[in-house]
Length: 248
Image 1 (cartoon, helix red, strand yellow):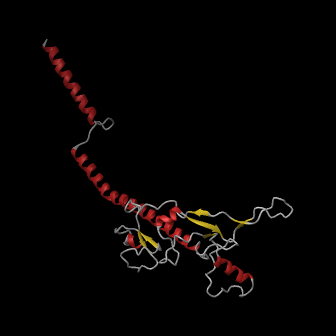
Image 2 (tube, one colour):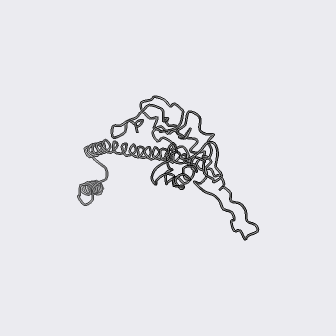
């Protein structure tokens, strides 16, 4: 009986020694980490976190700044396009030719040879921009304080205004042999929109902008409300390049 007990004890010891040897074996290491290994891993993770977080933060900020640039460009381009379409308009109404009377006088003067090519009729409005294909025909949106004919509000660019083609006349039927011939008629007045919607300021997360009229000083603290000549961000934050968003 004693021999059997010794054998059992020795067997347990043999198994324990074999398990320990197996754990210490390079080919079959035991699972888990030592305290030193955990401390080293945590230190490395902390260093990586401290280095990566600013990069991620700057990347997000740079993306918002790009969106701000695009929103400002979109609105400023819409303001310029609106202003181009007012050149040549006459608020007393349309002439029989389908052009604002001022534009008609300008064209007839040049066509009639009263001025050499390249010169302008004295007192006449400047020639329209070739990029402008229509003329704004609704003069009721312009107040007496807005003779420059910039858009009255940003919402005007979204809601749209009535326009007619420059020199456009819709010829329905001019065949003299056709018994159903009709007189020439003006093309239908259309409504042109210059913005799909007022963009959201990515810095404030609101569709609200700081406006400037053509009569406001560069350092004005408020909007004179005569017209919308320029738009800026309401954010007082500083960009990555050190500039203020409100100065963009």
